[in-house]
Image 1 (cartoon, helix red, strand yellow):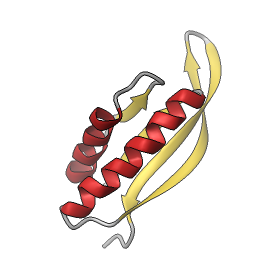
Image 2 (cartoon, helix red, strand yellow; image 1 turned 180 degrees about the vertical axis):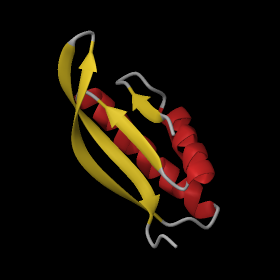
Image 3 (cartoon, rainbow, N blue to C red; image 1 turned 120 degrees about the vertical axis):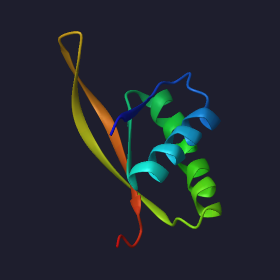
Length: 89
């Protein structure tokens, strides 16, 4: 499963669609954002995707964690948000 990477300039609706699509396929999605602008766009996209998925009968929850990411030899701290079903089978 691919991690959905969000930047501060990402279109919220496009990211929300990607989150919903990955979730529908895998019953799980991971979103990664580095920086305040990226985290803002990611959170808005997550809320929007929750609505998209609710229309399909999915009730999802989000769990946020820190993750160290190596970018061009430098370690950066990212926010990693996991999307999972509220009541997994």
